[in-house]
Amino acid sequence: MITCTTGTLFPGCTRLLARASLGNRSVAHHGLMLSMSHTMPTMGSGSTTGANFTSFRHHFSFLASSKQISRLQPSIRFHKLISPSSAPSHSQWVKSSSILSRATAHKFSSSTPSSTTSTSDPVPPTNAPTSLQPGTWLDRMPKSIQPYLYLTRIDKPIGTWLLLWPCIWSITMASYGANLSVGPTAYMIGLFATGAVIMRGAGCTINDLWDRNIDNKVERTKVRPLASGAVSPAQAVAFLGLQLSAGLAVLCQMNLYSIMLGASSLSLVVSYPAMKRITYWPQVVLGLAFNWGALLGSSAMLGATNWSVALPLYASGVCWTLVYDTIYAHQDKKDDLKIGVKSTALRFGEQTPTYLAAFSTGMVSMLALSGYMNDQGPLFYALSVGGAAAHLAWQLRTVNYDNPADCWSKFASNKWTGALVFSGIASDYVYHML
Image (cartoon, rainbow, N blue to C red; front, side):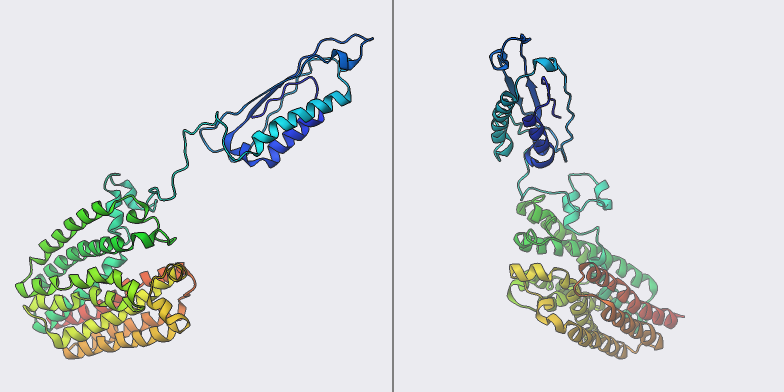
């Protein structure tokens, strides 16, 4: 607020107030109270105005606001202390106005806060921890564990679904082929679901440890706990130890063959983030890691992997990953290009639709071959193969590779691709059990 008390409004004060209210941004940020007092004696009729103009006092005090003020709204009060007949001459008012303007110009134009400016609310450094994606259900959890929950991406379950679906396909196809009952099948699906939640979170922790100095340069990922500083690398490593221990506990519920097979996938999980710095095909490594459950589900049910069925199913999943993760990578292609991160999105460029059409064909073909090797019935081909083909065709026909929001939407829709594949396998299994 600006309060001006003077004998009469003079041009210098008018110019000062106009500049303060309209043009000086520093005032709007710090807040200003300007007090101006002018005292003068009653002037006799025979004396000159200059002789009787005895004093002019001005005082400024800048008060720092504890909060940012978005705009200055001056409130001005004028109190007439002398009669018009006793007012000084115009030249004296101009002189006083000039002194006042020069005195305030330095304060208003200076970019350095004055010694009386409060520093109780300093601007946080750019690398200070920021709020972690506010607005999710995780915000209702205890503050102390929120960063770790965000680190696992548990609020974005699409990654868990994409990891889990190949496991469920393999388990159900193995049960179908071996005429296993529903009980063991349902138990194993539940066990793999628990493991998928844990290991997907562990994979995110590993990825963010690798990428923490990259994620803070990308708009979409800069609020991740490690990139923002909410979790330190040492804390993340300790948390990763807990995650891997929990994952191992789940894995140990399976047969020895499956334990060894499952443990061997860890090298792929750890190496995937490094591939983004080495090759334009990191999605291949991601596909090999993410679809390991197609091999593991079969061995968990049968005691050993049925390679004639599991291997084409695994290849189908890898092709599928190349489709959905290339779409995902198109979200960040501009930032990736600037900071040197490689991906199939950058490798394919304008040819992305052609490449993804080829990988979609590979996904559907390998899925059909796996079903053929497992003696699947017509429901599998109608729902699993036909449904997956239709959904992939819809994605490729409608996706806008230059729209990050649409890329995310199409990527996330792949949980329904997985569900369609499962619907055919499950229908065949149930029909076969009747």
